[in-house]
Amino acid sequence: MMKLEVIYPSTNKPGPSKELLSLAASVPIGQSGLVHVWGRNDMSVPRHMGIHWVVKDPDGVVVEDYEDWVSVFGAKIELDPGDDHEFIGGRFDLSKEGTYTIAVSLLMNPDSPVIVDSYEGDLCTTTLEVPPEFELIQHTIYPYAYIYDGDVEVTIATFKTDPFTPAAWMGDKFASKLEEEVRARGGRPIEVKVYVDTTPLFWTNF
Image (tube, rainbow, N blue to C red):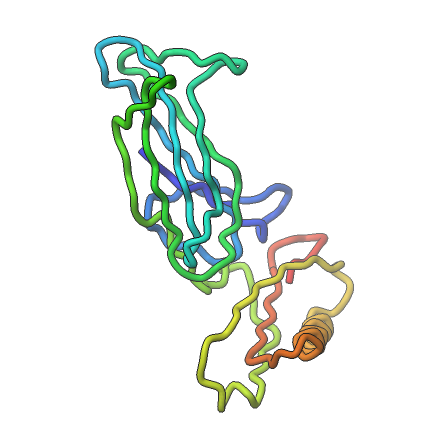
């Protein structure tokens, strides 16, 4: 069995919100992912069990290459018949829109690994969906958007501010500064949306 753990930092009160999703689930872009894989020894005798997987982003770039064997304090141990083990990889960002893929192999015999089960396909699909606790407070469409017809770079940034600064003022300042930075680098802004996190009590996310 395989699951994707997704971390939603926007609901950080007092800690991040976690959710285990099935394969090929939709995930709001900008979250953090962590792969969980459960392997079971279906043999009639004890066996060493290991795992190897590769996660790629929508552009085919490897974001995680993970391998591990069942062990205790660094020493490989055998799983008894019928026993299972949960493998947990490292955390990676889901920062691109599109489909993330995974190729995973369940292994036995560390000296000469043999694949006993495998999966290759979609891990999850990121979308530009905005988490429900965020409220749109600023939306600017620039004139160039009406004449440009081509690829665009989509970027999502999250930052914190104190609860005393008016959200509307902060949103305008952020949009203005973003436009300034884009133009300084020779680009042209197409559209800017600023959302405010309505859930925290003492700090605010944008």
